[in-house]
Length: 211
Ligand SMILES: N[C@@H](CCC(=O)N[C@@H](CS)C(=O)NCC(=O)O)C(=O)O
Image 1 (tube, rainbow, N blue to C red):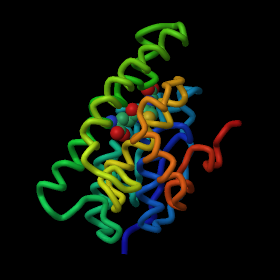
Image 2: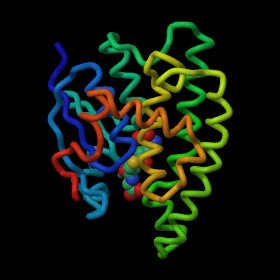
Image 3: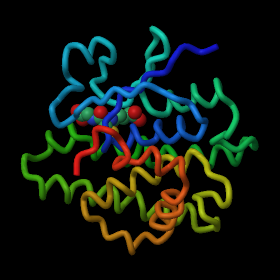
């Protein structure tokens, strides 16, 4: 039996939402530790001792820890292989990973708090920086996903790609990206939010959520 799971996360963090969603999908209970990014709790000595990246999410399993949302989700996938988030076929899997990485490695890191704060002190400038990279990424994603239809990114099966896209749309809305220009992204977002697991993991459902 696995030791108890503890998730260190922040309600509005898109990377945290990915992991909360995977945990919900697999029906795994966990203890929740809120790390307030706006209060810089991710840079406290106590947190850095556990996770030197100074980022959330981080999963603690017994006395072991793992950070990086994709590493956490892969561990969950391998340890709890039901409700899989990756297709079996190697090519299909590569395509799901491609779209996932477009968001996780290509888009989200550019909107990270420490990046936008370094870029400018002005919130409007930060938002327009984020808009630029989100829009560029969403244009490419709309083209990549054009051959597929159905409620999710790759059709009728929820995959890791949806788990990456939905929190990214949430970030886009926060910086006022005009989502009507990205109908597939918008549809994936609203379809997924209608599912219990995505909704349960959503920012506004978290105990530390602010109005
Ligand atoms: N590649 C990491 C990125 C983690 C990340 O960017 N976390 C953000 C919240 S979504 C964070 O903790 N930012 C803190 C900061 O910028 O100081 C992952 O996928 O987990």
